[in-house]
Length: 70
Image (cartoon, rainbow, N blue to C red):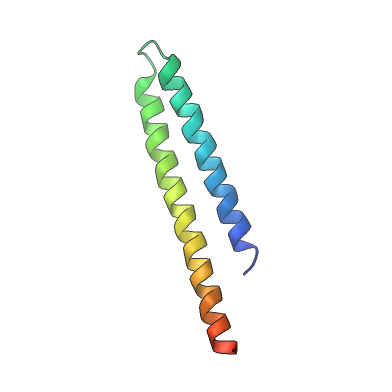
């Protein structure tokens, strides 16, 4: 169970990096590649939210297990 949180954090970091890359592409684009960069930004948001939900679920599960054993 403890390995789930680092994996979720790694996914959140990857999504943040993807967002930064897409934002840079938008800022430096001359207009031809904007659609792909916007899609990448949307995908990074979804990926970040999904990994955050995994981390939240893992924390809730760990809390429930601690409540049962105490």
